[in-house]
Image (tube, rainbow, N blue to C red; front, top):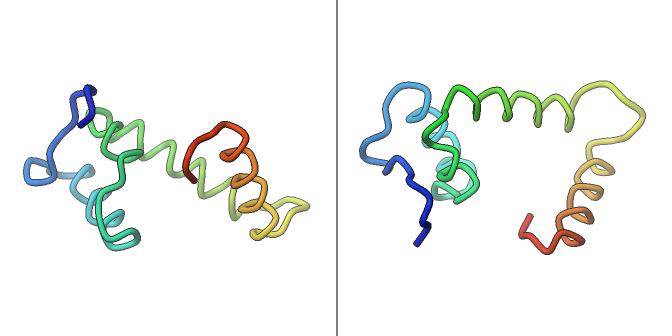
Amino acid sequence: MSWIKTVPEQEATGDLKEIYDETKTKFGNVINLVRIQSLGPETMAIGRQLYRHLMTGPGGLTKLQRVLLATVVSRLNECHY
């Protein structure tokens, strides 16, 4: 159990509910990375927009190369990707 205060799924409304629903569709549940940001859904939405841009926006790397880099960095940081 997290010691960080979060918004339970059944209490989510508006933008947060949309983010929770999208996450559940993609992963089967609301992942902790999303849950711990639940008190700031506006900020989380901006972060998600930045992530999508970094992963799919213009640049010299393919999407696969970007995913592989993210995986290696996560592994080096000893966190689950």
